[in-house]
Structure formats: C-alpha cells, structure tokens
Image 1 (cartoon, rainbow, N blue to C red):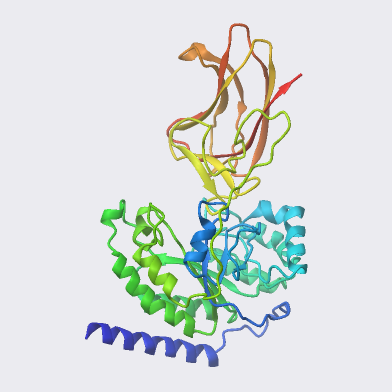
Image 2 (image 1 turned 180 degrees about the vertical axis):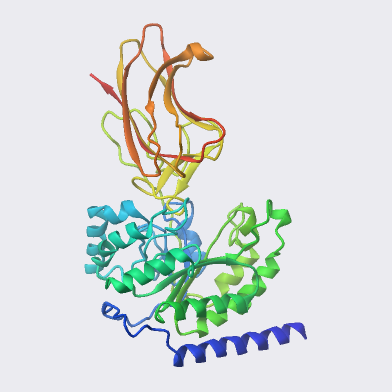
Length: 451
C-alpha cells in the first residue's frame, strides 16, 4: 500500500510541474536573451554516463551502462568511445578556456560533425573544483561561445545558489549565450524534492532546458560505507521513481548518474571494487538502454616522450603515482581539479604528506629541475623543494632547497639548477609539507641534465 501511494504521489507531482512549466513564465521582459545557435533535432536518448576517458575501463563502463551519450569532464575525444555513443566535451576551467589549442580543436570537431554540444565550467563555485569568480567566468565565456554549438551553463554545486544567480543575471544582461542549464544534485531519496529543485531551476533562468550532468543519492554524514544510511535498495527505489520522471519532463533533455566510491556515495556506486556491476548499476543499465551501443575497448594512454627527460611519469598521465614515492599522495583526474596539461595531475593530500623521486647520479653532474604547482586553497607561508643526499639521514642529508613554492591556487612554474657534490651517488628530490597545509597539486615535473 505504501508503494502504491508513493507512485501515485509522484505521478501527480510530475504532472503538476509539467503543467505549470508549460503555461507559466518567469522571464523578465526587460532582458533580451541572445539568440541561441541553430536548434538540434534530438535523436539521442537522455541517459548518459560520466567517466574520465583515461581512467581504467572507462570505455567498458560506458558500454556496460548502455549509455546514449557520455562526457569525461575533459575535451579530448578518444577513439575508444563505444560505437553509437555521443561524446560531449567540457571546458572544465580557466586553463582550457584560455587555450587556443583547446578551442581550435573543439571547433574542428564541430566542423567535422563529431560534437553537437559543449558543457561549461565544472563547479566554478567550489574551491576544490574549477574555483573561479563570476567576473572571471563571464570574461572567459565568449571563448566557449566561439565553438558554435549549444552551450551549457557552468555546473555549480547548487544550481540556485548566489554564484549561479549572479552569473546568469550578468550573462543575460551582457548578451552572452547560455543555451541550457547544467545541474548537479546529491541529495537523499526524496524524489518529489528532486523534481521540485529541477522545476525551480527551470523557472529561475528563463525556462531554459536542463541537463543533469551529475546526480546520485548521498549521505554526507557517512564516514564509512558501513554507516551510510542509504542502502543499495534505497538507491534503486530512488532510481525506479526518478528516472521515469526525468524521461517524462520535456525540459529535462539529458541526465547522467555519478559513479562515486567514497563513503557518502558508496551505495550509489555503479561498479564495485572488483569492477563488477552493482545492483544499482544494473538498475541504471537496464533503464532506457541504448540497444545500438558498441562494446567497450581496451585503452592505454602513452605519455609523450621528451628527449633527454629523466623523470618517468612526470605528467602523471599513466593515472598511477609510480615510480614516484612518498606518503599521502596520489593522482587525480580532471573531475577533481584541472590539470596543467592532459587529464591527470599529482597531489599531496590534506595535512602532512610527501612526493619524492630517487635517482642515481655522479659528482659534477648538473641538472635543471622544473615543476608546476598549485594549492587547493590560498596559503600564507609555504614550502620549498628539497634535494637530498639519499645516503645520509636527517638534516645533514639536505643538499639544496629551491625557492618557496608560489602561494597561489593557479598553476605556477618554478625551476632550480644544481650540481651534484663530490661523494654523492644517489639523490632524492622531495616535495614535503607538514600538517596545516591544504592539498598541493603537481603537473609536468621535469628533470634534465645540463651539459
């Protein structure tokens, strides 16, 4: 009886919102919205998937979920995308927006008929994501418009927060083009609340279409998978009510479930630790399947080789930390922060941690060390890179220290030249930070011998 009542209530709620959206208007008559690009006759199903397309098994996971479209938080279109799946690129943050190479590549893909849409900045209101001011986002937005395809709004942490409201007001006032609104949602299992959030968002920004590019059931108080209050069956029940509703709502054009593994999202994950589909993943795969989807393909990203380069994996594009050592470090993809180049960067986590590289050397060799770093949050004092004699412990082993790393959340380059002293046969280049510091990111680390 409870299940029947819930289904009846949901049907009434969806019908009520649809009726209101068809007849009402919240547009300001004094605001003239720019003309959108030519509309596209939608032939692709609404259900999509989101996987960084250099992550392990991303192609297989996209195929297993029977997705009609996919995105990767990035702008590189990979050959291994399953057949009959549409790729939608994203300009994640400021670096991509400022890059002529990125914008020109996207224009080429558009002219070749390979992309039909473009997604805007990823959580620019989040310090650990694109982390942009409204002023900066507005200034860079025309770069995204240049691509010439329907353009999705920035995907903020909450689609109706102050950052998003200011951005949309400024975009409309300045005649910038925003063709559809992208939404993230990580709530509980209350489907009517979710639908109401979408309706509110639709009305708030001139009744533009909506894409839900990330959503899942989350328990933000969970500190481990075991104490997550939502069971997998709870999540399946949410899906079985929410997904049909999304299919019925005309203004919801596309949606994509977020496949997270951390404790708050553990029961919403589509795959388990052994790469097997969970019961939640099976429910998502079975709903509105793409029956024409091709099989997944093996993928292997081979980083470019630089002549004379000594570091291996200095750009972290293998998605593995090795051969770098240290503790509390790892590799993060473009879904976490925007790398300087490629799809991955290294990171030392919150608090104390280290990243180091050991190298056999000879006395008299001269090296140039280059590094690119950024902090997640602004810092006051900062740290230096140390070059140590790896055979001498303690303070006596320190040979050299670089200048302090830039105290900024923007990627900043640094370099240091040093000559190996007599008696030193192995060095350790180490980035170390003590407690009290936020996460520190690295990319394109380089070591070359100077002749």
